Length: 415
Ligand code: 7TS
Image (tube, protein in one colour):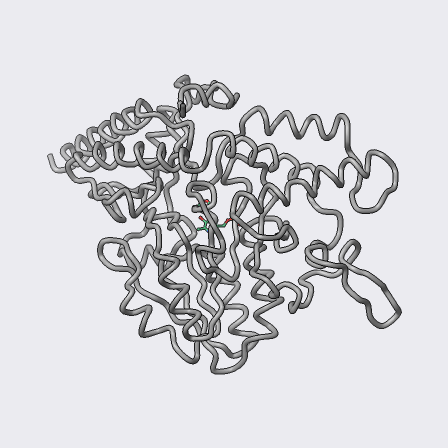
């Protein structure tokens, strides 16, 4: 049985206080906390296994290599990937997307070609394409967002056409929580002969994912948003794509033969993992994946659906509070952005912090979306497996306190 209260016992950090209040951690879309199973796996690795991988014939190196490679299998299981060779470890989602922009984009785009993005993308799914566009002469087109926080699918149908070489979209918005209809858009992209990249930074941690069912050609996500350590990302690519692509970075580990003027490349996926990788943190990510597998991704999603419904209900009842994004919990995840009339998100976040509550305030690396919403910034609470309804209550009480402070101030100012 899924129990957030029981799960909390595995997270040492959740026992700490902030400003003499119990920590209420609601910034999970930025990064999640780590269970002791992940922390212990890092310590165990350094205390008993530490060695470089894929090189030594000695026992430590063989063991470290086996542990590192086993995590590829766990990632494949998580996302339903048919083969471990289609999974590349990177530093984060950002690096995974940059890898595609460089290694696939440089070879496949030229002047007049179009890349279709949306206005709800994180900067890491915008800027690499701007750089690619600058290098190749390709053009960026943006699908707009409707007033209720969905992609404008009519506009998507108009934009995706014969000039489109790539469609690259977020699966679940880090600001609005919106779960985008990836299968439908994959159909549009493929009918136009384009490739389709899915930014799964917010979805892989929260939803069951099956890459073959999604219809994606590339999928990118980060370990640190799903209980794993920082410094590990994943790029998955559909069959045949990685073998056609040139390496992203050159160096040790990624070669087969090195000659004076040129070299040949190692087999997949090693061709894309130049240099000593982040061995310990990949192994720590394995412990995170075991933890999530123990809960089951459908149960993770169900908990998040319930707590999001509760939060939407309670926050939505506050006068002067506007929630951005879909109201139907079946069409959204647990990133809940809101604005309070006349109060800057940074002030909200500071007052919440004084009560031990961590939320994020700002543009959330989504400046195009902020402009589309016509706000400078939002406040965002985002949930994960260890969050409880009591914590949502604490958030609501704190927001009410913010309103009291500011209404008092504006009242005094008026007087
Ligand atoms: N894509 C989405 C949808 C994201 O939410 C993020 C990080 C990234 C890409 C980049 O991930 P990284 O691991 O490469 O940094 N989002 C957030 C956030 O919402 N608050 O802090 C980081």
